[in-house]
Length: 201
Image 1 (cartoon, rainbow, N blue to C red):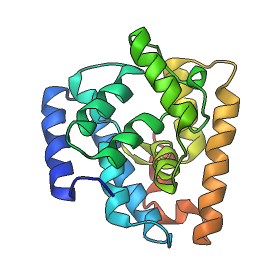
Image 2: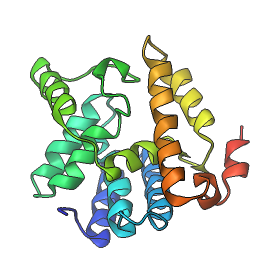
Image 3: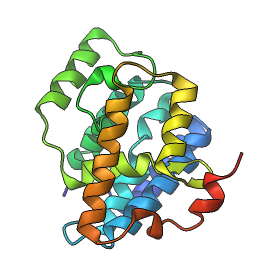
């Protein structure tokens, strides 16, 4: 697969964190840890590839504070390096439900960018890696691992809800169920400190 090495991924995130410091950096690191932990028990996934994809899923935030725009910025940034599989996750991680209207946040893209994302998401087949990062994105905060419900409500409180929010939540839970069926255990068993993080204020 076309993904950077772990060393390069860490360099890219470190650089991005200096350009746009914020809690998103720690969230990315925990997402990577969750992805690697789950992939380690999944026969079809490479834990190192999963780790890199988790590490860089929000890399578009290197350009500053943004909403929907961060996914196209991340896609373009990673695509230019030739890492198409990793770039794909930059676009897909926000859409467990394949509908752009389900996005939690503002549309700060140009019309051309929005149309590109809409066409891309409609036409792409999600791989196990895409779904893994969608899941792990929803299992982590900047302070650690947490129950899905905590993360989903946190996002809803910060960005609001829409007519598709519950459908998006259900899609995320279906992904969780799919992975648990594959690995034969609860994903929560693979996320150390989840109880403490979930019940933090």
